[in-house]
Image (cartoon, rainbow, N blue to C red; front, top):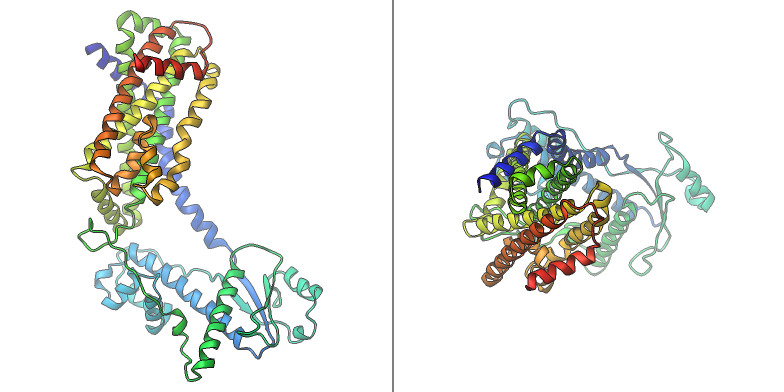
Length: 491
């Protein structure tokens, strides 16, 4: 046991002092920042879509589309102000109606309250008085769509060439447009066909115009039955369904409850593959430098493989601790409410009952992947030899990532349950499903299966290591390795 721990200590020190370890530690937070910032940059830098409308019915449908553009801009302003206030303002000091509006910017009720309160300027003034020290300035989001008046004589010369000329012009030409909507005479509930001209499929402007015209036609149909009705709220009124989770006693909905198990499972895969790959490279290096012979003169193959796997677990836990601290710091800098929300979801997923099982699944998954990579490294004489087995193995190991969406739609359904009993995938899928409270017999059964699979993999890796680590022959085919593993497990 002493020799095993010495090897584990040496492996841990060797990996954490390498330059690649520090690069991998820095790359994950950097990747998170890039994945968060780049979409904001690309979304914020997109120029507004310019829309030109030729309404040959008198202008009512043009006005309906323009009103829809105004409501869309209000919704975007409210969403941006809500995000800004959540990170840089004390919502508790705002009037209750304003705080409620900013907490639920997606609802139609909040949008109407935003409009009734005076719009962006009035609500921003309230938020300004509740800002925390050193808060940055609020940036008004650019509109998605902008209406521009068409040339006066355009209705008399509506030809493809004329409209195409308008679409090819560029800003700041006053008659440049990304799309031209032509509403013909007689357009209405009985003849609901209009024309949408555009030579660029960018964005969802067509769907937006279609929705605005559909609402206008429905309002026209209602007015035909009840001429005194003019309130457009008839088209936007609807039920607001508030999602709640009984595990959240603070009244929050637990919006991250589904994201947390997905993140844990993906982190398991990333950390396992990353650290197991380093383990494989280390064994290949030791074989090429004949250092493995020195190790075998001091310890048995079983002690060497066990020590290396313990070292990988130490490196993986260290990596997780550093990543978790870095993400916590970034979330705290971005929004204190986000930190509270994440911790609330973590408390829901990681309870006294599920916490030990999550740790067990994580360690088993790490040991299964590590054992496989260690076996591949012990059979290979070079990294080129290792690639012949590593490629097919990675395809098998990455297969669960393609099934995340299907499993999370119904975690306790037939697909998720069946995949949880595939031995090498059990830790991954059970980490996905554990927040959905699968039956107790499945939890204990899959935990036993994960332990048995891990034990068999470690034993198999020890035999492969003892047999191949000193040989110079090419590694066997993957199919032969799997058949040998199955044969050994049946003995």
